[in-house]
Amino acid sequence: MWVAEFFHVLVGILWIGLLYFFNLVQVQSMPKMTEAGAAKPYTQIILPRALFLFRHAALWTVITGIIYYMMGRGGKLQGIPSPEIMVGMLLGIIMALNVWVLIWPNQKKIIAGELEGDALAKGKRIAFLASRTNAWLSLPMLACMVAANHGGFGF
Image 1 (cartoon, one colour):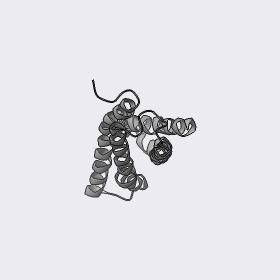
Image 2 (cartoon, rainbow, N blue to C red; image 1 turned 135 degrees about the horizontal axis):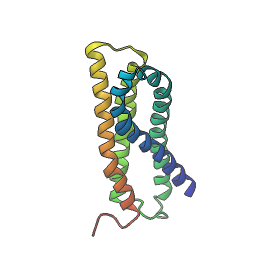
Image 3 (tube, one colour; image 1 turned 60 degrees about the vertical axis):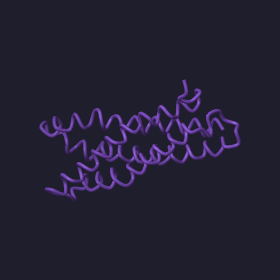
Image 4 (cartoon, rainbow, N blue to C red; image 1 turned 90 degrees about the vertical axis):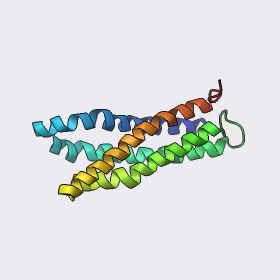
């Protein structure tokens, strides 16, 4: 069972790390990169790879989390099932859906140059808001995951 937990934590770290990178570094740096003429190389070289890892880390975090949860349903793992882990799973699934349904489709069109004018602004806004929502949802999700194995939220 430790293998499922290990891979769940590993891909979860990759996913949340990239999420924080996009929200705390990229969003703040993109205007300066545009002014310096570095935005196009970044969006054509680095961003597609980062988004590939981001969306697949989201997918594999959910898959390995479900596997880990199902293995623990027999009562062998502390914290599974618990109300906290159920809330954390729900938040994680919502976040993964945001990645695959809102963030990635819009980013793909933006990178490919398929959007212009108002459509471009709308695509950027949707991707930004979905990503920012995920950043905020990650906090209670992580709290639920930790609480599930450390006695819950009861004081």
